[in-house]
Amino acid sequence: MQRTLVLTVGRHIALRKKVYSLSFRPAAAMSTLLINQPKYAWLKELGLKEDNDGVYNGTWGGKGEVVTSYCPANNEPIARVRQATLAEYEETVKKATEAWKVWADIPAPKRGEIVRQIGDALRQKIKVLGSLVSLEMGKIYVEGVGEVQEYVDVCDYAVGLSRMIGGPVLPSERPGHALIEQWNPVGMVGIITAFNFPVAVYGWNNAIALICGNVCLWKGAPTTPLTSVAVTKIVAEVLEKNNLPGAICSMTCGGADIGTAMAKDERVNLVSFTGSTNVGKMVSMMVQERFGRQLLELGGNNAIIVFEDADLNLVVPGAVFAAVGTAGQRCTTTRRLMLHDSVHDEVVERIAKAYKQVRIGDPWDPSTLYGPLHTKQAVDQYLAAIEQAKQQGGTVVCGGKVMDRPGNYVEPTIITGLAHDAPIVHTETFVPILYVLKFKTEEEAFAWNNEVKQGLSSSIFTKDMGRVFRWLGPKGSDCGIVNVNIPTSGAEIGGAFGGEKHTGGGRESGSDSWKQYMRRSTCTINYSKDLPLAQGIKFE
Image (cartoon, rainbow, N blue to C red; front, side, top):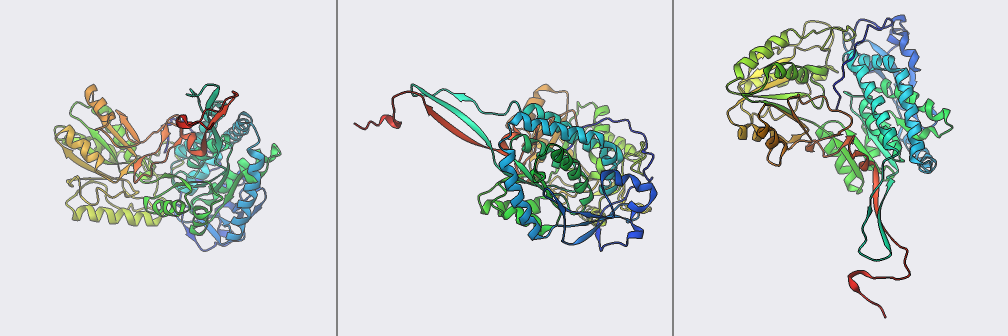
């Protein structure tokens, strides 16, 4: 769910030198909020304040539960958000439905111009918005800025796409007839996003859905509501400057009640859900029950396969980055490292050495590569997974402990000795644990890659071109992302992003993913004076 991005960033002078994880607690007293401290005054550049409205549909509101956003290192509160009630959700859907009537009449290239302006508005706030992502989600600052850059980039992509979407003119078998495909917007796209990419995933959906002629209704993760509010403020300002209904890009912060309402609502023509496989399955069943459309981006149990001819100078940094980046909280994180038995010991030794050199600390320090987990619950999941791995025969080579420092920091961990089909190996745990497996043959490695339930990202390292094309072919990887000599993370926006099996089957961002946001009609036009009927039937 992310592009490889190389950024050189200095320390933002107004930012504090700590990053904290985010969870929800009872509303905190105003005097303790970080937003009221001078070192966090930059939050107000995003329009944030102590108490923030969590509903936008052309006007701001929020009469639901008041929740407090907390961060990773010392669990101090940032600010509060008033979530949506179901009544406000209903009002927002009605306003979005009316806004669609305006938006759908605007030519696609002019819709692209609005998306271009959204991208420019994001550019102007990229550092401060990236800082908020780092503060609220817990990823390092350079990744926070890079995530906003993804939204900017997909806006640029969508601008060009707005002049290119459409269907073919097909040969008709009947004289004097034209056969064409017509593509129209589905209407309203409900976008439910996850905590780990609180800006980019919305951007992928939002920019493409808009140029296709849809309106958007966003429910961000309950643990990153300030990011949802800040992004919506930026988008809303662009719409308002162009005298367009703000409800074109609506937002309702909330929990499972709002998500359930969206999944069951027949007025929401497409539900795009990013999150866990378990929750995605429930969303899918609710949407399918009403024969609605769905776009699912769910879990990934991604593998790198290293063959005996691999360039280990590529393998080691690639595997380390893919396994520890974002503290193992990417859907494309490498969780299984399969090593040919001839290189197994050397690679384990080199990667373990590299792990010990990973710079852990303040996510706003330009030298930091690894920050905290998002919540204390994730720390518990980390410890439980390590215990299960030990019980199933695994050996902890590196890491395995909660770090003795404030916040949700855990050691990036390498575990060897497990069977390829051990239950814990087949379980996606959203933490920085890498299971190292030893294989002997290509056939064995390919089968192990495909035997897990998810099918998101996969990679091999080899110099054998025959093997490369076998890997890409029908008997190779069954994943939606199939890489060679690069790791499992680092997807580019120009390609379609998504996976197979329990990953959900949806595709976002580039290639022809735009088709997910539109409906297709096959149209036959008779411009002759005759009426040839199907199957040669003639009525005299």
